[in-house]
Image (tube, rainbow, N blue to C red; front, side):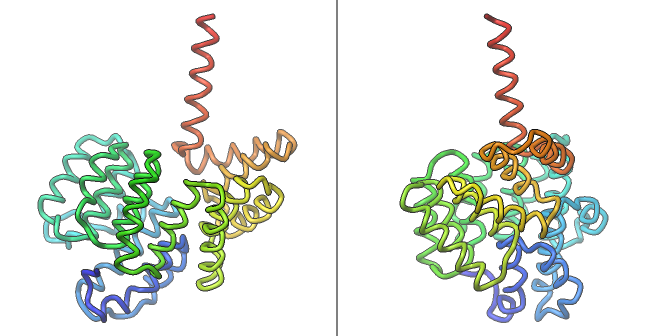
Length: 297
């Protein structure tokens, strides 16, 4: 169920699809040359998708300098500006209050709900993110809920969201991606189903670092480390600063017993481009736990 008109859907289809598939540069290019949208909302959302693409690339400064937080700015624009502020510093004073105030004004907008939930996730508040997404039938919102449930190790609840998405539009890119994520979470024979989905999307819409990473992760699960490395190096060529690619390359390098300096090179790059990446936080936490145990012995 879409909150957009048919003309708005058609105008925004490519940028929405590209953003879902990780083609952030394609979204930015479309934002520059996208032409005049059919409605004010379509034009606003094109700018919002463009700013989201900049955020995906880690270019927070551009969004902070362009997206307005003034009360007379469109609420979707204010939402992406607040998201950029939180992405720059998840511990910034008043972040949660700003997001909640925005929701109080624009809770009927799926775009605002999506960006608000994304901001809550950056602050580590998954429960608030899920509350924000509850009851929304927009596919992007449902796909984000799937990701949250999977991060909580609740593939059963994620599966319910995927079923709701399939009932709306089973063939939509968001629905296909969400189903594949759940397949990966379950593992086993379902890994092949996920791989087929990513391969099909790649064939249909072109290769992106996100799709290559997704297929590489499956190959890592199946012990196909050489193929995974090939896909990750291709992804790195597309986006040299992609944090997930670097994290996955570290894992593959360790499995393939690569020279320590290669692993260290990827690790240094990851620390530079994404110092708060989940992989780094996990390994740092594990090392700190080890040190505490060692000291207590």
